[in-house]
Amino acid sequence: MRTVFRDPGRELAFNSDGYVIVPMLSKSEVDKLRKLYSSHTSDTFDEGFHTSFLSKDVEFKTIISDTFKELFKDKLEDLLIDYRVLFTHYLIKEPNTSFKFNLHVDATTVDETRHQSLTIWCALEDTDATNGGLFVWKAGHKSVHGFRSVSQHNPVDESVGEQVDKVNIVLKKGEALIMNQKLPHGSMPNPSKNRRIAAGIHLVPQEAKSIMCFKESEETLSIYEILNYNFYIDGFEGDNSKNSKHLQFKYNERTSWTGLSAEDNTKVESNGSAENV
Image 1 (cartoon, rainbow, N blue to C red):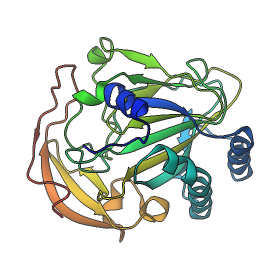
Image 2 (image 1 turned 180 degrees about the vertical axis):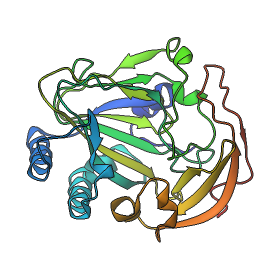
Image 3 (image 1 turned 45 degrees about the vertical axis):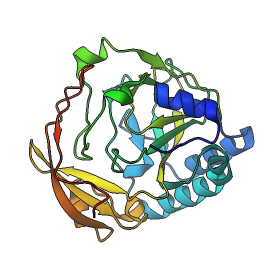
Image 4 (image 1 turned 135 degrees about the horizontal axis):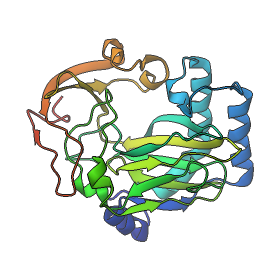
């Protein structure tokens, strides 16, 4: 795998632990993103967690994309070597909620035998285990192999989650967690009186083709190439996304994802590579 970070110390920590924490936004930049969110969002939500990624408001999602890319562009270029933004969104935990995300792994976005994709989670307020903060399986990315579907949550088995090295992520306002897309993670409930707001950015190497995987059966995934970034703004509709003009079917992949183990019980029988499309 090629180098991800310009700073050798961050590169070493990222490869070892699967994540690093970096200063990212100034107070005024945080305030700008919070104001953007509040100016386009209703005060009432039934869900404990929601994200602008699933919003049907294409205009708002376009504004988010343009604003995030402009605000983060120079910072990401200073930190990373030749990465491009795949999609952006807000991640919200409503106040007084018991909703918790257990350990899981996000869907595959590149051929991970050749490339490393990234998730950036930037705190727009001080965040820890008391108000919906993240936790990660430290070095858990080393136990994750195979394609992961957008059709399901890709959970880590609870018995495994009880044994592994979980780290609560503490972030000051404006700090960001940069993690390997394969790193198992979750988030705590938010029993506080305030809404927890974070900015999310997903990136892939400039040279990598972006993909999306769908569950077709218990043993089969379909692999699609993402042809246009606008897919994440006006084309994503869950499993129905396969009909999007921004996606192109490439091949099927046999898999037996069962929820990870510390000994890596995920078995993948590959029919091809996402780069051979």
